[in-house]
Image (cartoon, rainbow, N blue to C red; front, side, top):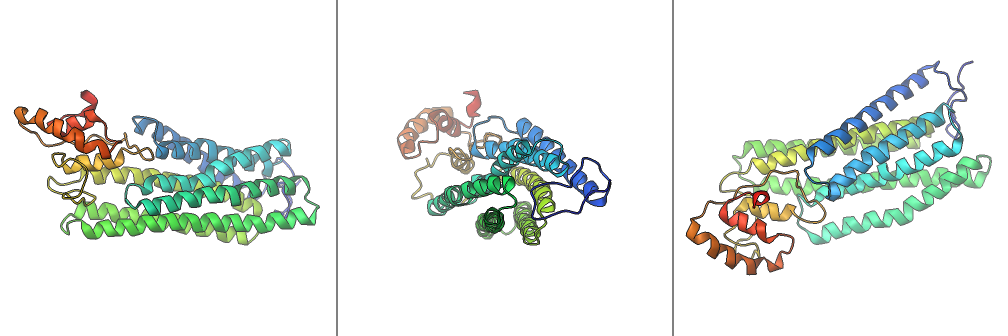
Amino acid sequence: MNSSPQNPTSPLGSGNSTVDNALDISVIVLISIALYNALELAILILLSFRRYRSLYFWSLLTSAIGGVIPSTIGGFIQFFNLVPLWLSLVLQIVGWVLMVPNQSVVLYSRLHLVSQSTAMLALVRALIILCLIVIVVPTIVLNVGWTYMPESPAWVQGYAAYERIQVTWFTVQECFISGVYIWEAVRIIRLTPSDDKRRHKILYELLAVNVAIIVMDLAVIILQYLSYYFSHLILKATVYSVKLKLEYAVLSMLVSIVHSRGSESQFWPVDRTTSNIPSTCYAGWRLRIFFNDPYTSFDFFQPLQGPVMPAKDSQQGYEKNQERLKSYPQQHTHDTRASVMGRDPRRL
């Protein structure tokens, strides 16, 4: 028996468990790509990060394992009617929450690396919290109601309208966060030495990745407005799996930026006359202090080496810097001593 055409207004799938048309094959291909990307990324994340405590680590990992995989499996079994509807619905809701809203958390968690504006970071954080209340909760309620009462015009129309609203919201929100990231990256490019070609190349690659993410967001929203429910559902999981892999590429680029610093340059300009960071700390350690916050905590990075100071000056410099670091509580004392003595803090 041939599968019936896709019905964009119904939560049910193709009506049977056979694979006998181009749409079924396309769904299987997209699902396979999404699952492969998610599993590969989960392994890479676990092998790359040295400590599992940063927001960036957990947002990436939960998006891959708890977001893409359940959403993909839920869409697959619903499309082919393989299990009861409630099970596929639970998988899709859990996957959607950890995949779509969580993508904004991923973008936010790396925004700290290019922006030191507390106002901008607070704005993005408030925007993410607001969307959880205004968008996520109503979408889940309407999805459940529409799934179990597909003949009710109120539930069908309400879900259809709010689904477009939430897709538009998250697309605009992710584009905004990516736009802030691009703006700050361009600002850094202008502040870095003009002859630093490697760093400029890496930053331009970062810009290209963020532009690619924005383009994929626009593709998802266009498909949603064309009212192809299952095509949008399956393609969304595949697109988000690709976006997560691009995020991992961004992480690798950021590591390259850190290690490409020159002996007399630093990535973020710091006012040496007003900074609370000890003047005896090398510029690279200023960068490490910035990374060592509760949001990013990039233990993935190799520690940057500080200046080698004479032994007789090490203890004196260490004692002076203890007082000056009180306004920078995230930097631990042993890290300060390491930066003064030019040693790896993990070995102290």
